[in-house]
Amino acid sequence: MRAVFDTNILIAAFLTEGLCSGLMIRARKQSFSLVLCDEIISEFEGILRKKFKITPTDISEISAIVSEAASKIIHDLSPVPNICRDPNDNMIIACAVNAQADYIVTGDEDLLILKSYHDIVIINPRNFEALFDD
Image (tube, rainbow, N blue to C red; front, side):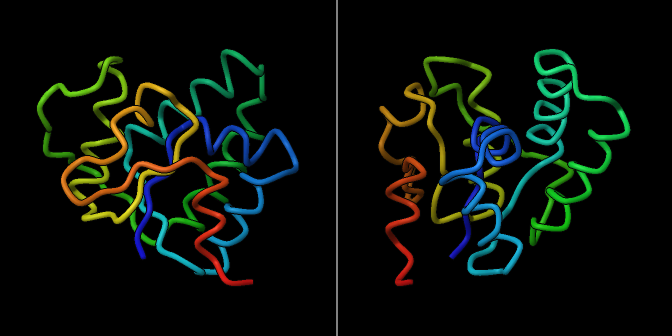
């Protein structure tokens, strides 16, 4: 099973102890294949720096953990049509399409309202967690 995490899931995984951090642990244990792209990682790092004032050293360490958890990082995204209410979310769709992902995991209503894109299910973290047996 391949999944793309939206930036908000990555933020929650590192700034709170809860569902999203548990999903990141699953990714690190390779319970599923986490696929990301340079654009998601860049947005993640920018939010950590600007909004949460995380130091560059800490951002490097966090990014290393994210990169280690990802089974693949896509460096050259093929674009998709503008389908999201928020055009910034199109990169999440593009990453999932390029990754041939089964799921996009997000808390973003602009993505969740779509429910799916082609064969990719757009799902919240709680419903993604429910897919695992343990």
